[in-house]
Image (cartoon, rainbow over all chains, first blue to last red; front, side, top):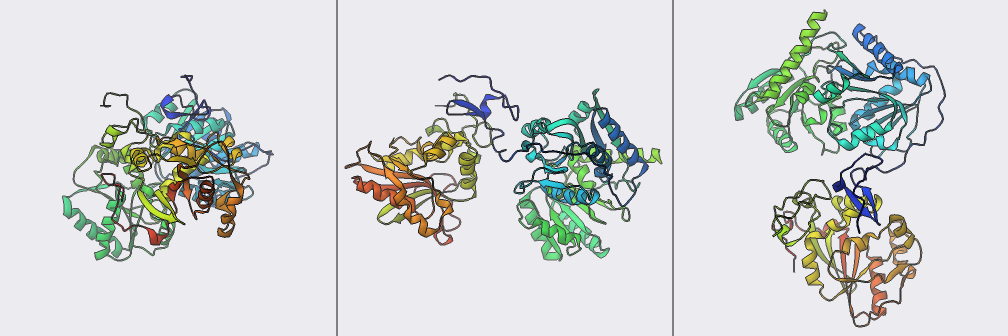
Amino acid sequence: MSMPENFICPRCGNKDIKYTGVRNGHRYCRLCIGFQGKEASGGGLFHRKVTPTIDYALSPDQNEISNQVCLNYDQGINTLIHAVCGAGKTELVFSVMAQAISRGQRVGFAIPRRDVVMELTKRLAKTFPTLSVVSIYGGHHDEIEGDIVVLTTHQLYRFEHYFDLLIVDEIDAFPFKGNKVLVSLFKRSVKGNYVVMSATPSDEVIRQFSKPGYSMLQLYTRYHGHRLPEPKIVLLPGFFKLLFLLKTIRDFAFENKPCFIFVATIERCEEIHRFLKVFLKGGNCVHSKKPDRSEIIENFRQGKYQYLVTTAVLERGVTIKNLQVIIFSADHQLYDSRSLVQISGRVGRKPDAPEGEVVYLSDRLTKAMEQAVDEIRFANLHLQTVL
Amino acid sequence: MRFDSPISICKLCFKEIHPTSWQHLFHKNMPICGNCFREFNPLFLKTKIGDTDVLSVYGYDETIRDKLYRLKGCHDIELAPIFLAFFLVEISIRYWGYVMVPAPSWHEDDEKREFNHVVEIFKSIPLKMVRALVKTEKIKQADLHFAERQKIGQRIIITENFDFTGKNVLFVDDVMTTGATSKACVELLKKAGARKVKILVMSKTIDPKEKPKEGVNPNQDTLRIPT
């Protein structure tokens, strides 16, 4: 039996015949087959006046960009916000969200990571107390329609041609980055315009948003106006790295500063934790296979732990006061300049503790490390010219 | 040799399959790659239900549950052959001369799904398959208590279109939990005149007690069927 050779998946746009299967004589797409479930019907919406309530003022830079985003949305222009880590990206879109909701339009907020979705839902509920904020992620999808829908990028399949305004944060994060299915699901769910945000957009994204009809807004200053902490590169061979690690963590502990040690792989994470445990008390390790990781992070926030050995799970969206960061084996191939910048951006995010230390601990100097330091220096240089 | 044949892609991870293992020499058109196969943990557990021998290829673990959901819940028929792909030869030798009878199913479920998952999983085994058992009522064993499960026999009938007298029959199913269905079916098949009945299940829920010792991973380099 001959099958028609041309096939385009109506959901994810897959055209490649090798990702399809044949069932009962007709072709179906296997790439997006996991995305099945309740889909949004498009219920009634009504106009209402809302203003975001934030208990602190936006900085002048933030205000400017926030207004520009609103203006772009009015003109039907898709926007990329390129802002450094800790610049307060989320606040920048509050006013455009309020604007869209006031007109009775559908607003969605998508993030690749599930932990961040949960956190952001709470934050948006606080910012818009009169509205219903609905969150959708794997295992939590009883209610899928509300005034504001906060969801993981995987859950976008539930919405077809639905959102008037869709905001996607952390577009360079795993698993969204480089996943064609997710990108096409994202395109499919937007009816109006979208705003994407990132601290470290790829060249490809920057190129796309430089075209006419798109707009790129850049914010190089953190909302508290302080410099980004510049990473310190420490090159040590083999075992000396562990000694240095011990000493640094102990120094931080004396000053009562919490500390993250970033490690590339889960096995290494367990190993390093087992080693440190012998000499230093009050630590733990976190990785994606740990079932109680949100509990550990909550304990760490409350100051029950001195240090935390972690993989890339805590690379984004974590704000802890007075945090110090050590990247162990920063020369690992897993770290590119973007993830190094992201990790460095965990430090000094609170206005009352804007300084902090970032240490890249490694055997050798890699291009990614150099690039990351350059990027951070560039942003700081820009800050100096502004002030 | 099949090195020059076009490279197929893995049904699970969508990557190209490079024939890295000796198994690829013996199995044509392997549906999954070696990396994905390493996720599976074949146990070849031998148990008994009444007098009947049961062989379960896998335990009903996370991997199997996930893949079965994709097959049955998401209707991804292409996943059906992956479960037994590496054991076709072994199974067909072990049960040479037997006639396979898949577990009964409710016809409306099959129509909705557009295929029968048990048939699809075991179809690749080179043995004769007869779909002789039919459910007369829509019922899901997983929703029932132990005591209620035992009554399943009343809801299964055997269709008359095949003569089982003197035949060796192999009853096949995808998941076995308490074995109530299998037991009822075996009784039916014996009544129909089958000479010898054996059960082969793809996966079986296992008690922690029954688990094999740790450190014994039959999946490591070669395939071993415990005898």
